Image (cartoon, rainbow, N blue to C red; front, side, top):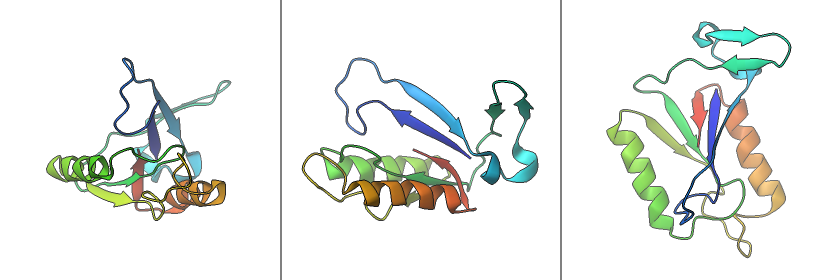
Length: 120
């Protein structure tokens, strides 16, 4: 599984979005992993395939415009993927997307779900 995170979240107006790639060795779908490098533990996930499930979470601030999430899910469907929104994706607690516990639970549930191949 891999997770892509953009600084600023959905709808960020920042000039540059930073992307980070994470991988969970425990949920790597077996033979889809290309390589594991010893030492620094660099994991390389396999490519996404049509019909893969992509989890959508908000691990920090809530999306400023909820329609942005809908448009992102529709775009994933057009590309042939199955989007899976997190339970608390649209929650609000001030500027955050829910409480710390809700956001952490969303992330951990996506990592635990064997059907989820990627998280954005």
